[in-house]
Length: 277
Image 1: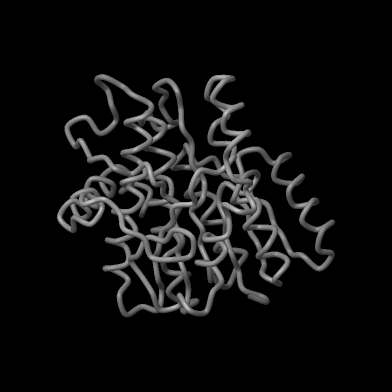
Image 2: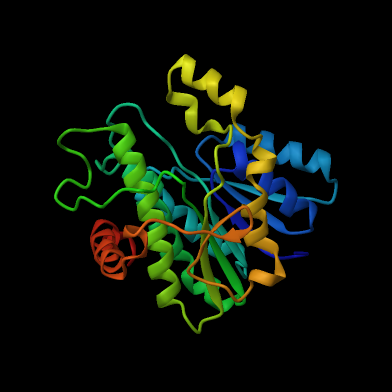
């Protein structure tokens, strides 16, 4: 991984932070887009303290804003000659229905549309840097469907349903992306990290947060498969798969539906098309 350029979203806490620490320790150039620059710089300083030769750069980027994502990607491409690993790790779970800066239901916007847009804006650089890898984080809670008539849950909002739909979308996106990238030298895979104590539960109730801290795996353990997909030579040519505990895992019937994946791709493109120009 020495001198490889790696971009990791959601790296101020949880498995994203652990992945950033390990990749930087392996000699990679680690780029962290963050909403809160103070948190981002604190993580950078922590990584540099642990590994004095670490190269970490922090950029401002709000994943709930398409404009912010586009601005960040423009800055990144002005500064970096290559992108070898893109880890779409960031995610959230909101208890109540909220909307993004673009007026889109927040869970769908941040968990799915943000990585969809960022990946598209960086694809040219990934292809130029091949062999390159895209790693998306999904969840074992992806057993759901895509309700195209109520995709933003304007009616009957459920935080549980919104999260599950977004995690299904992560797998469908990965599979369709892998199909479209066939022959380019860029792979796309996703992973289910398991039940991990991360910042994802920060908006849940006190009982839930305490329960998670008591029984969930530590972030370092949860990051193992993410790090594996970003670095391991044995997966360099594997694409379009979902992994768990460093092995290809079975996922739901809906997540393996190519027609559903293509339809979601088309709908997602319409959401972000003005930012792809």
